[in-house]
Image (cartoon, rainbow, N blue to C red; front, side):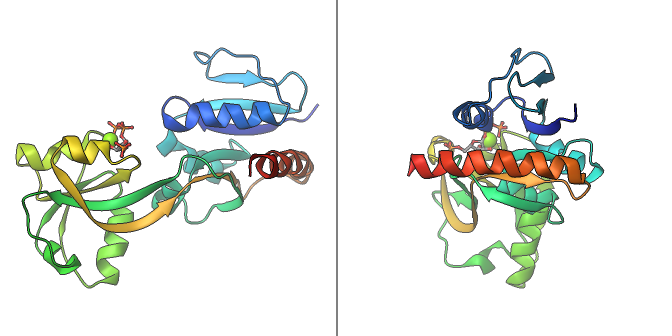
Length: 212
Ligand code: PRP
Ligand code: MG
């Protein structure tokens, strides 16, 4: 029997809420979070637990058919991938921040500055839009430490509660985008699997309505 293949975050903030929405859809998954792949018992669905940043490429290649992923990751790495449904959880911002002690007036203050980030495309688009030239320093995690260790003048990263910024003596000065979890669809999904997707979307929509 054909199954639809869904990617969800292996570990991290999206993982639990992603599993929860599937559960609320009445889909029970044989776990093992340690396994990288699991099957649903009562719905034609297979779950692949993957790294966030890898998911856009898997969708593009058609290795998975759909994914629950942060919109911000698609904006950074998967502008060609379509969104079937906004899911209303894991809301966050992608923002620029500077040390608290810095006097900030406008985005032009970033001219010639060094910005540490895991979201180079998003930052570059934002700076280009404002005609600002800055130097991007790409790091994959713990970005907020960069100004404190003299690696950068500023950072761009996800802001959720704001506590990471606060702990690192930084202040948010530009919100580049707001994001939430979405259901993304591979451009290579087959017709047969698209039919399964319709059934899943129908259930997701009922769950989201009930949550309101
Ligand atoms: C994420 C993100 C921010 C932080 C934002 O980091 O990169 O640093 O969460 O959340 P907050 O506003 O609620 O503090 P995460 O803790 O996932 O670790 P990482 O950056 O090292 O991957
Ligand atoms: Mg972080």
